[in-house]
Length: 340
Image (cartoon, rainbow, N blue to C red; front, side):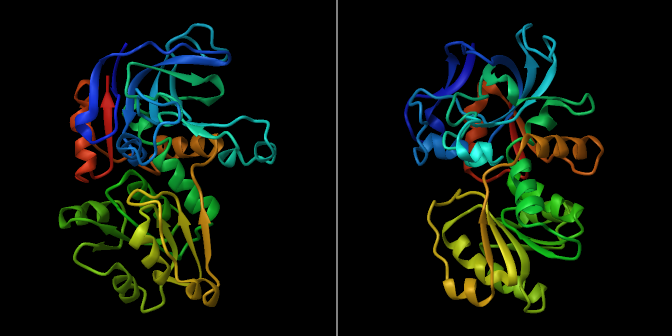
């Protein structure tokens, strides 16, 4: 098959396109012909070596995949059936899986991270990870949802328990996580303030439902949150940057507020003023995906027009290097996709 892969760590120049060994499905696995695959920040961490692929190099990135069943022996699916792939893998037998908490499985992993992913014509996936794709959704729309939108849904709806009338700070409106989180918070009846890295993303953020938008490069987002809330602070922060952003976000929260950490795209480290935590009775929660049931809920909301996938650009697989550089340059407003 043809694939975009890398044999050594670095920037977009390390992405190669060419022949790559066909994946060989094992027991309870099948092949999916990739019709669309979304890029994510975790792809960049894998590429530059901050999160080296556990199976080593060469490696094929790509966590979010929609496509068609390639095999004619998959129970419950006909050959050619349209599917979206749930990206998380778990063992199903450890103490956490048995408690129903599969995202903290002792052997948890992601498609495109712990195994070769969707920057390719074919991808090998466990049959239990297949989700039937509604005919109302395009492959491109579906591929924009399984990681970023699902994580945002789980962070806000399950972990933070967002409620009507609450205020939410969403970082990085132009990202897949940010563009989804704004919509999900608004769907729940909350008000949203968000951050962007350039003024040309302000109107974009407002079009998603953000009431206030802060350019974090030229404004102090904590001070802007205090102005927007009348010095009260927000009820919820969706944080996926790390570093200084993580450190400052605690100051943006009101008493009894919740900060949900769902990534560390800038740095894996972050400090926190513990006085803020115990004096304001804050909750700091982490999450790294959601369940297949939640994914079907997100897909249904999109099919019914309650949420919309935000797709910035689509690149051909053969031009994966340009797509990666586009994300590294932080130009995107929503999701960036590869199409074989």
